[in-house]
Length: 387
Length: 185
Image (tube, rainbow over all chains, first blue to last red; front, side, top):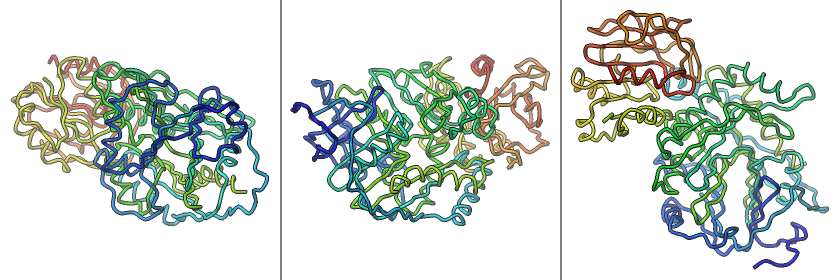
């Protein structure tokens, strides 16, 4: 059911909706006929049933939503201890009946915004962070992990206007995997830059990012590339992720088909440069949607390496639920094609509580002070929206 | 058939694809060994993995059971697993190599590879072999050009081969040739 001139403005949409960045602009999904809240039990049924569906309507025959961190751990049989935190669903998927293309400039204005609480509490202070950091460095020395990403979380209580947040964020940081979910009692606003899965027919690719450089007037793309190439720490982190993603793809792809399409290139965004690689392969026959999800998620570049051992170390350490953070948002079409990102640089607002999680990597030559501050810079870009 | 024993590493499936260039490959987790496949296989490969060889006594047992009976290949942790089973000490090192490309050199006349040949390899190891190391019929045949750390061992009598580096990494040049050579040995 598509209404004429729909919508004139984003604020006209009173019902739940989702916006997802496309190459040209944004896709808007709404008029949800189904909403599935995932649990560790129903997730198998949900995913397996998708393999039996047929694509009739190219634009709306899909489920769009997210898998949280915990449910993805559970899928690959990595157990989490009981954790504190918001009791937010482990995953939600929607069946849209309406899909519209929006231009990259989103029209929206909310003049009644004020009194936003911009005081954030951090769950791990610098002292505790350094302690965890040193503990993990020992684990690197003993070979239990080669790279591990410590997560810190900023939280506050505030009523926000997610559309306003998303539009402002898109203005300053138009990232290729940005999305917004606005539902009745929660919203997720993200400027994720990282694509985890693009699957079309038998072809699948992933585009890990390892290495970020803030833009300055003196920098350009060539200089950024030189910086990354010279920087041994960034290079090693990136190499590790490339080999890990090759291996994850190799689980589900035909032998010999996994190739590095773009090797360690620089991509330029509004505020920063990313050091990225593009790896692709051709799927083995009879690979199911569940096989693909289990092979690729949670996305390795935001966890560390090797994945299973590193997840176990993280889960033994973290007392609070990551919720959506380092989960994946995206869609699965009824013909099996899919697109998923990694949920980073995201605000989860649930029952008027906001949380922003960030992480940065510990490798053998990282410095606790530097990484702690790096985390703050990443979070600040989102916390600034509360001003 | 080549049977790869996975120590739950994030590089194992690169190893699987590399060996699949040459023969049928089966791969199972170290704690979910398929006895039929293990017995049927002509070659056993110990995969890379986190931790230290002493964390995987089951793999050491398999090594001892099939030493001299099947060709055995170890990569990274797998390399250390072979050495550990041969009573070597595997120790932490001061400088750690993760995602590091370095140059190695063939240092022996008895190697399958040409002496003094140099090539670039990818490394992901926290631990190393403590030297001196002696075991019957074993020889260290490849070393890091800069640090001199043991990077390859060969036992051509029992057909046992190990690499501390990762032949399957995109950082290793001619990794496929390397594997081809030890498979045809």
